[in-house]
Length: 102
Image (tube, rainbow, N blue to C red):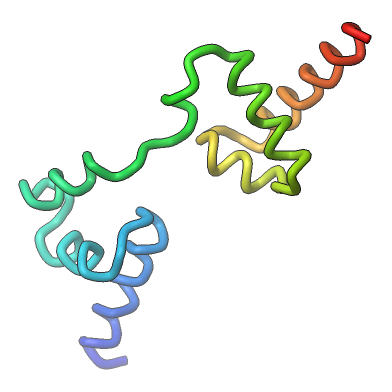
């Protein structure tokens, strides 16, 4: 494999894993994550939903709503930055709470 092909593959992997566009992935690859420019746009990047929802019950309700709309367990785990077993456990707890309330 030629050198420029390897560089492109690494940039693509960085873009997928960090959720940035191609030009920013190239800067991350070229300068590294500790470069001031890279730190600046990584701070501006949207953080996980877990940090925006304050209480545990809010996160659990959001998980339930997203699951009802069709999101899978793996997708929810990625969005809420947790393990799949945590998502399943939280969905089960929400289900028990709603059944107890009826």
